[in-house]
Length: 391
Image 1: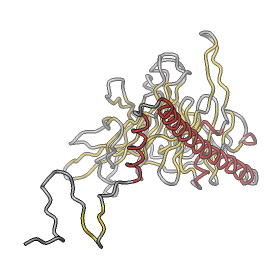
Image 2: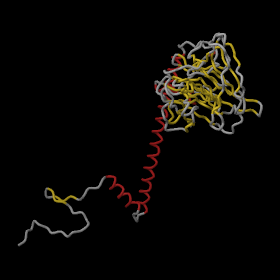
Image 3: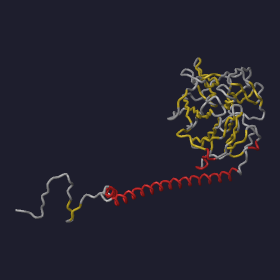
Image 4: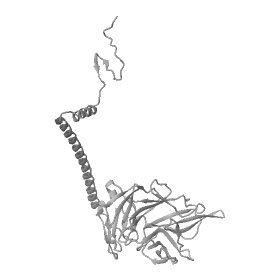
């Protein structure tokens, strides 16, 4: 007995069609798969004309794709330039109405004031300002900050050599080349200030954690001793970073160090802080000043010997490059002398004795006790340091 509606099929590797609503359907292929199969068939076809047309088709598709990508990149570039021009116009309009800083000169670096061997820089009223070093306060002019395009504000800055680094309100670093510099022969150094807004750039993955000390270092053209430029960020804080090279902080396990201020120039770091010791159950913090040596060691610089309680220093410290060579540097600390006169302690890196320059018009802030004292309010140490190369 036979059943005409049944069909017996042999087993094979070929997928069998399936029965649905009295129609047979083959497994469907995607459109791109069918297209590639057709194109392959044309390229290997015995007819030369069909092979030529297929090759021409492939070349046309590739050319169209390339020009499409170029067009998209061009549009994005034009949009970025439009945003930059718009930000520049907005910055020019707003900054022209802002009053100029009243700071007459910058001799000591801080988080909002700094200088190099050519220019001075300050952050005031949410703007970045610059003027030639030694000029009066009428010469301040606003300097465009790249973060303005994204609505960011400059919070702090650091300058060394030809590099200006600015920290914005989102803990990101922006770097600018401020000088066009070169040596004319071996005796004449030439530097011209660069106000080009397009010389700003980011700093890779580097960021400054909150409550951290930081400063930039530039071994630039001004110092002829170095054959290649080395630009770095020095960061000291409690947060560990995933980028950069760790560098040791002064102190030891038995005598931890609590840094208060950091300044760096041409690869030499200057740090002010307290070393903490335990004496007969009492915690004693002694104010100390160190500079880094060439072998990653730290050299202590004793403060002037005084016999009065009127002497004090601030957390405003500065190390300045004064010429060629690793040792051609100068240390500066803002403070008061034994007569209570406001001024600046100053000495060369290799000298032992400190000098004092009176600055009666200067205002003091962040005074630090000079003498030993018991300080339970000072946070424990645990600080770590990193050196991050600026890419």
